[in-house]
Image (cartoon, rainbow, N blue to C red; front, side, top):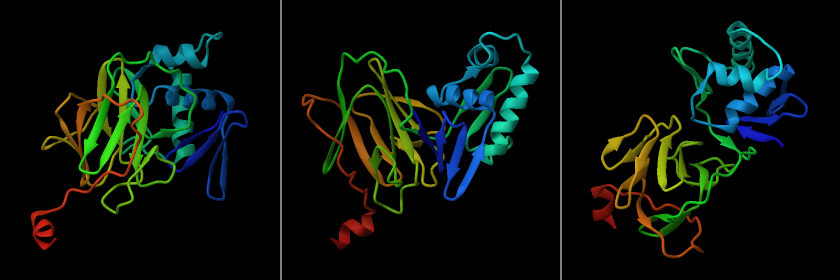
Length: 226
């Protein structure tokens, strides 16, 4: 099953990456590496974990992993010093930091508590798993505003925890007044802002609630002009 990674459409069966009119072919093991990373976006894979996942029946050294990572970065147009896809975690391993859309991923257990993000004109039901918020039509939740980045942020429910993560957006993702730099847990009553789009996390009582447009936070000057 294919998935979307930033501007790339990934076809694991064909070992191909496609973007606009470009097609890049990957070695099967390099594609295996990409699909492994995409199965746990935002999570750190240790080097031993990746060696076991990509070369399960072969004994290889970390040099093979380093070569595969370098090939994958080159195919994606990624730079190790300023990554937008694959981040090196010193002395540990790697993680995929780009948004993954439509990829096959085992669903975690359903949370015992149901949450919603609620704004002035919205109700966002948070089911288990990960959703991506942004301006791109491929996002799970689309923000039709120039204040939002194409792939702005992700919200993930893991058990009874709710995590919000910025995806390298220009205008930032905030919990309260603090701009977050890493995945951050939010709790009922916390106010989350995606650029200028704000909502508050609440316990949900209506399981039929659906995603709607996020309302923008207006400046004082805009409010007084209304």
